[in-house]
Image (tube, rainbow, N blue to C red):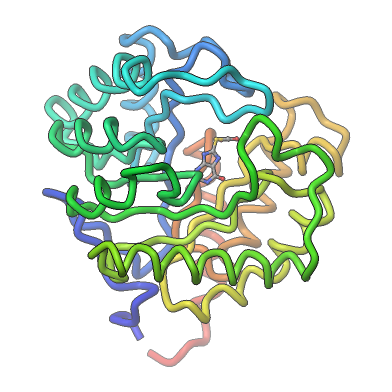
Length: 287
Ligand code: 7PJ
């Protein structure tokens, strides 16, 4: 059971990520305009202190992002992204020996951060930018492929799918896996993400979570990111700073539906929610 593709350890540079139980990825935004903690962690010192805290609270991975994917955010050049991300990656790797993931779609950024010791790539565009497949393949790192139709700037304009959302996501991810394999990126290096909040209505998001277990058929580890997202805001009518409890409920459910990595802002409470959920799911299974 533990060496099935969904739970086999991932080789992330010098780190090995045990996925025999669900792990928490802490979000570290280094953008001046990220929607939920915009501007709070732009300074290097603040970012590093925040990362240290997330690691102490039990984050297995720190996901560093220098491009805001907030709807309507202005595009950044690869150089701008690198200027934001590189010093943080370098420090987290050198001083804290952290497993660092970098949230980027830019091949230039992928190349440079893998040189700096990042252990994972996370691309909301699933390596569709020109040169991204090759850059990711050359990095030797695991890659998270996320489902999104359109671009962050236009994805929330009346999202529509001709088939059920879970089927659209499954087909898309299956095609991206094939593209990766053609580029020499082995299947065993991939992580899959349905892309909650990216080009989806609240109903799409809720249904997709409820049926997320259908993605297990692809035989790869699943990642879910719903922390503080507007699907919580819309259902509960809560502003972004009051979405923690809603997010914990979603994280627990994602674990039940097969997620092995939870991408979150609030690491401590999320680790508790995930570990508690996992304890229940394990009880009564064969020894
Ligand atoms: C996600 C992400 C997500 C992955 C963002 C936010 C928006 N990467 N990057 N999955 N979301 N893999 O954090 O709310 O859901 S940025």
